[in-house]
Image 1 (tube, rainbow, N blue to C red):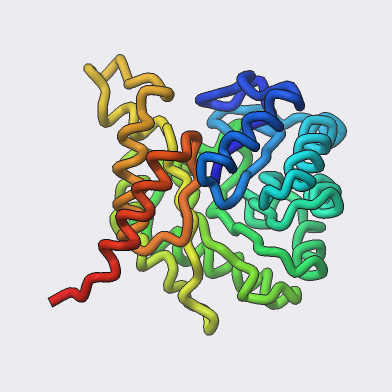
Image 2 (cartoon, rainbow, N blue to C red):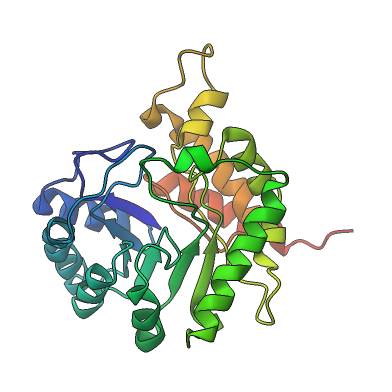
Length: 272
């Protein structure tokens, strides 16, 4: 899944693809480089980010989704708003990636149930402005799994087909670095929610995130810049894919696509 941020303030590439023309060109470039899905978002969800209006989000993503879908790309809309998701689906998007898992906008659930499209349910504990204050866990894997199970139960009871659902642990969302590493190391547990339809496919969004830069920092006060974490992201992609992830959400595609292929071949070999 290749990322197209139509925003001026996303954490690693805010402003680079803010114009519709630049965003469309970037999406086509990602598709040509091997991305299976192009994830278009118009609202930054970085830690501390404030929300934009629905009208502004629609203005940002509408022409981009339309153009990419017409060009034949498989487009996912990255939004917490049902109205934005609905417009995107009408414009040719084939998937909804909701970082709130339906918590930010209750109308999202009915839309997903009616549309039948794949829906990414991310673990979420609140809006970006203050989400890090909620990064408190006794056992992060057990608690994230339990909270995702609750969301899946709500969605399926409301008529969403379990086959539509993809789980995302929400790396960096109300998570400290140690929480992110624990979730990555135990991906298979996340797929096995306490639900009759489990296991669910798992999407991992680790690309360029701050916990990588902190690990690779020259010192505690100098985390590695976001754009210099792409090689490390490729390493995480390989490990996540070998560990059972259904997909990875990344900023740069070619090397990550290669990593997925290597992991897929690795997993074909029998374990003694």
